[in-house]
Image (cartoon, rainbow, N blue to C red; front, side, top):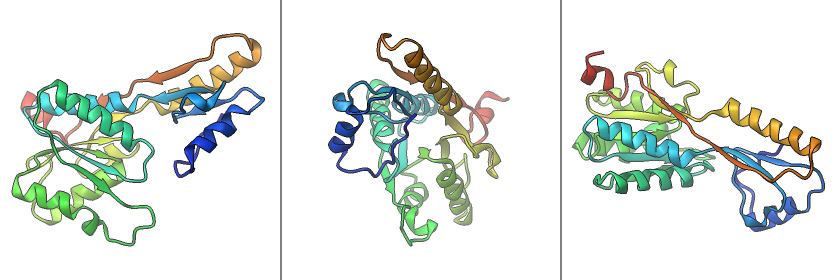
Length: 223
């Protein structure tokens, strides 16, 4: 079972190496291209997860949703694709996309999120999908320090759901099925060992939305 480091470069060389493996191998929570040979794959459908968040915020009346995501995350590109597809499919106004640098960055959290916070202060951004939980929790704290509130000033959905519920304002979250990804990957490897001739598999598992307080859904439904 392989989970490649997101910083591996060049990617083509990595995939060429993967194609030479002589043992059954399953790529876990990563996606490889057509050069990956007999490598099997199991991953969360992150594009679907991002679209799920956008559709939820749109159902609450927001016609413009921002995306805030880490530059170094291997999932950011997929989130951006799902986000853009949902915006177009639902006829929403395109929202800004913010890329947050955290890996090796000495800037304070306040500085990293300054552009986002200024957009909330001006009313330009009223709803956002933030990847990941740690950044979403940090953003809630920064907004509060500036006199802004979640969900009143910013309806927020986080992507990951590892510690989202532990935030001061419990965060609505898109939860990738991480344990299930691992279980399916192990099952694929065992099946391959038992029957080497079985068709190669590439499996995408869909995340789910867990609604809490940060998006304001409870206030709108009266729950």
